[in-house]
Image (cartoon, rainbow over all chains, first blue to last red; front, top):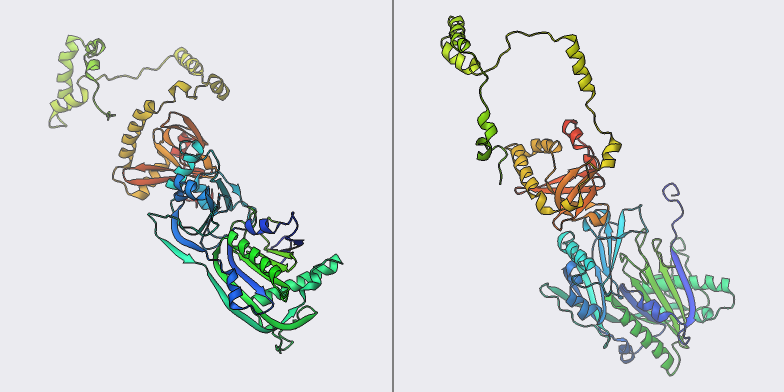
Length: 361
Length: 227
């Protein structure tokens, strides 16, 4: 209601159109700059044989571990992991609007998104958060790759003192580490803390039969920009329904129009689809490799009977940043998701959905 | 630890000035007459007049009459009183009366002050229960206490520990162990100090009075919600 909100709540959806063959294409950057990925699914508009689907098997694992913050600024950790690969960590707490969230992004910045109480006890300099009531949350950023962050320097000693004396609480973290050479998930030595190793599980056996699939070639090229926008948004609706395998897109769906009048965007045709699903703390490099193998698979397919594929990624709703250190919050929903429609000639359409509290645009 | 109430040191007791201290001169006739006269006049009312004489009258100076001062003397005294001059606040600032010179910013210099404060606060604490002691602490003197900033709006104040050397209306001035003086505003900060095995917390926002006023002020219960 407008009594409580100065302006209506707006979620954002950014749609862009490009091709991976272009040198300026941002797709790699978009995937790699989005560090905290919770959920991934890939949709093909046909049923793919089990040998071929194993092309997309890209194992990864991550850890769930209780750590004090002082662990992150130890020299060994910074030398062995932060500087020799890509460590990503996110604390699992109640929510970004009520509790403290600690995150380590892929560039080696430790981000502390703190409540006012914790910030006032911590003793490190930060900035008030962009969202929420004025000056009730604060963001402290520590660049672990900075050269001056070495024992003996004042800044380092201050951070160490604060983590040893004021914020000694342990947080439950999800941590993944990819070595820069192999680009595969690698082990982290957590001693003396007990870590639980979790494998990311891919689910290949998701087949939707008899669904209505719209012709995505109609938004492949932009002729009329205004019409294209409308079509693209409609398609995005359909992608959402497909990803939850809704019954509204089944070809035999006979729903009472009182409940739903949804029709897939025209022209559509009945067909079968298959899903690859994955949940967990997915490293962005893994997603990038999956993206590459999907586009390669589409281009190398002999019959060219798979014209396109959809890759959906859902970010953690309570992550303190969305893309590239842009601050993120949770108001009505903490959406920070993106979807790619990849065509077999390398063209792609990118959707980026963001909640109200996000500075990325 | 030095004791506040110990007897005077020997070198003072043996000094020339102390030896020259003599009872007031009394003439021979008075010395003979007074005891007999006093004991005789109170003999009928008390049982042991000799004891009363020894405790209340012997070696004491008493004025037996109360002479009126002449008006001239009165005038003189009034003029003398008026001549007592105090410094104005501006003069105090200009002469830097209350500033602590830089060469005195040394932790060791103030350790005796802290020891003195410990004696003082122990005595104040006595056997009182925490509630009453809290009331007493409101009016206590904190010069010499080791205070720590535990919570503050300004991040760089947090964690500073030192001996309080000066308290003003809005400031605590602390000397830290690395011999530097830190001025910390009372507002927007919470201080703690340790006494025996108890930790006490001072809410700076509610403490913003000069120590002299604080000693006589009546405090009311107020909730501390926010810094």
